[in-house]
Length: 343
Image: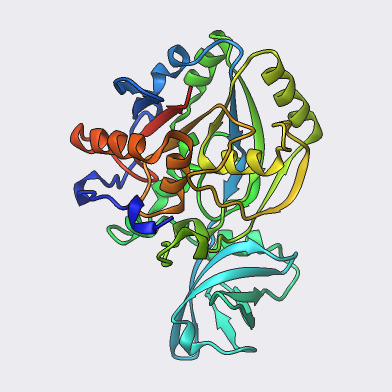
């Protein structure tokens, strides 16, 4: 499909630079297959779902994966986006033309890395010497990797260390938050439990590739970056049992959705999964694992707007986004949410 079909005009003032407080006070747009849209807040969610439904969260934890350093007199920026092994990460590099294989980058605070190899997509493998876990080095020298549409408008600060982390964050490895889950609070989780709505967690370590624009003119020419994910056998069994009993599986975030769809077989049974996924969902895709999606509002011409258009239909999502803009909803990572129920 032509990428320009997924374009729309977003006023800059719609981009949220800080999250709602409290988190579950964010607005929530309910989008069904047809009929009027529903304007709610996130804390209304228990009344918008049914007893027996299952919300599936991503329990990845964002690491401070953005580094600023130097190679000699050249300033070098690095955003780690995928672990290769214990000491090596794949990274997107700013000012990469000043970097060569074998160069050492000094990121300060005693954190060094060697530029080991350049990849075809322009990213680099960085190798970190020493015995300390790389995550310890990042806690010392790294910053939270806020999306460019936020970081370009204000500096990262201490509040982002907690604001850009979900309450489910447990497993280190993401360089972008699964932002749909940023809206959840302990009080909301209690209300969901009281309403008979259960929850499960899976793991997908979100990479910085999620922020990359689609530069191709046609979706067939766009290559997704791979991300590592895992669904345990026990979680897969409970999800399949819930669906067999008539419950709906509602993915909280596109990361959970893409992992579930990667793990589902042809008849929709979710299999245990451990490994990389580079699934790219566009209109025409047949969803097998999920029955709905809770997600924030996405960028024009992004792979994520393509995904929601695949779930609900392009015209329906264009209308929903036009409604959201007209009603003053806040967009992107720190913005408001939507509940998409294809029916």
